[in-house]
Image (cartoon, rainbow, N blue to C red; front, side, top):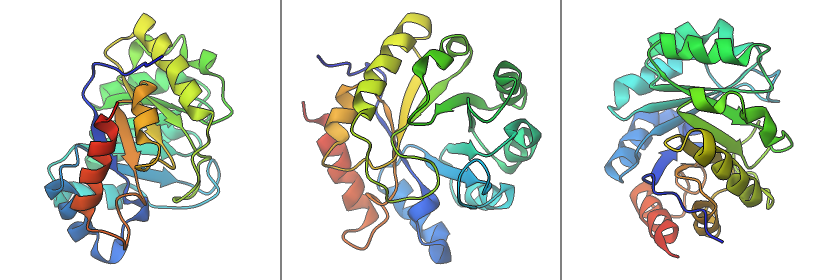
Length: 227
């Protein structure tokens, strides 16, 4: 059974796997290739076992593109940093249900800061934790790898989880975007879209040495449209 949504399919290249030595050029290539958003994975070395970057890089990316910035906070106590990332130019801010004690209040902070509000689930987290917050968010992110590193293998049960989340959102918030992050490529993007995801984070499938960024995005878009 297909859970393909009527919401537009959007591609969000993640700069985590881009060449930071020529980041502006990488972002320009993604924008020219038809990217819909730029995804920024922020990690603190506590919630996720890696450290990436903070508001300064978000501000630099904001200066390099007019695309919406999809900022994913994989950090403990994200409520402490909502204002800084909003001021840096985030269009949307996503926090993990596992990382903040008062999720509803944190979501309110994001909205009050003028950003789209998102919540994310780790692979082993139950979707029931979304039920009470789902009416108040613009986006739900299902992690299809464990947070921390780019280039990981897609967890196969994630498509089932996407279908169940899409069903919950159709009941409580049908216009809410469903995003997936981790291990998505041409080999599985069709299944991901048929499972209800409409915002697709792509990292190493876009930023790699095999093909130009625009060509990679075109191949992904074609694969996503196949039924």
